[in-house]
Length: 487
Image 1 (cartoon, rainbow, N blue to C red):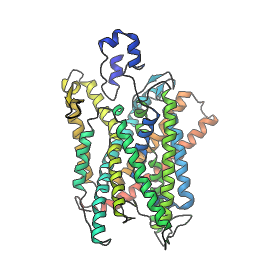
Image 2 (image 1 turned 90 degrees about the vertical axis):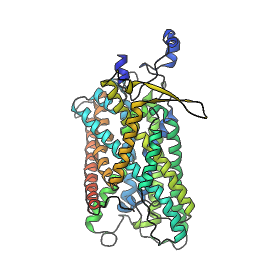
Image 3 (image 1 turned 30 degrees about the vertical axis):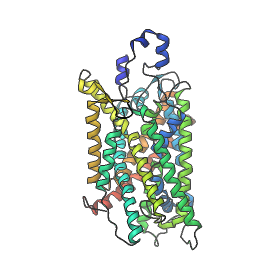
Image 4 (image 1 turned 180 degrees about the vertical axis):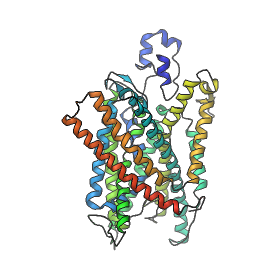
């Protein structure tokens, strides 16, 4: 049984010492109820993980999304999806243990949770949606981080040469730099040792969001500020054509819905929490802190950004040069975006790393290349770093492949919208609701069952609509696609 539990893990835990095994009281202090080294995660670290995963640089594109939907629908959609995401995250938090949410058996990954509560083909569907989304996000973050790095050079160029200068800069060297950093950080063994990086990344997300917010306020307060805004957003016949209005509205709704999604890593985050108090209660509080904090920033950045730029709001007003001055502040904000994405990449990559390593340990348990840990002394600080040969080769290879794909397909962020549409419904809505129904044994056709199903179907419609918008945008990008072209 102990072997099975260890094989279900995202990583290999250190074995208990002989002294700890001989002393039952000491062992109970050092190990959790599943035999693993005691978890140390808290409300603070879980909240940091969530904020790092949720508040991406996409917050700076919300002004564009609000511009497509207008003053009425835009903020309403933001609030609606914040409530939906928080609600379904509480259902998912209760599913971490089975059959009961407090004293049941732990499940270490999203697939394990679905296997325990639902089983069958739904486990494979969950794995496809989750890991497909995680791979897509890591590729997308490589592209986005390079765009922010390029924006620093372009900002300095515009400051020296004037706002009308061409200032063409290639993204590819910066993708390589980002990948090199990720190769080093990917040797962090597991989610449990990622807390410091998530806290740094969360601080960075607050920094660049606040800068974007302050610049929008300054633009609004400046003299001679005249932009067009409306209750319904961009105007057909003036700003866009009729079909463009429809497709962009679909994309905007999808962007907002996916901007809150962190269900792909929720179970892995919850598995870092110490107990008592019960993990599900702490995770619900962390979800509330994360989602409410995110919503405040989203509404402020989205609405004030729309007020500042009107119907011509850029896709990203820091990297898209909605602002040119003060150039040093724009540079600092873009550096913050890049640092945040360094941490966010790891938050989304660690479940992929753990999944593959678990499968390999299960298939080749006696292979020293896969299982043996080597202690390497870090110069200057004197600490020991545990290096695993397979982990080093596999994780390095993964980072290199994602960087190469990012270089070949620089429009991948549009494809990421399609991946988000495909994974949002099953992972954020469908599975949490179905597992809650199964776990609490809600009677079929009861009032609670009916309104949960209505919520599920409504979110399915949103995913389909957003997928249609993403496919249209992707088709448009492919037509103009020129590989390895300097932007």
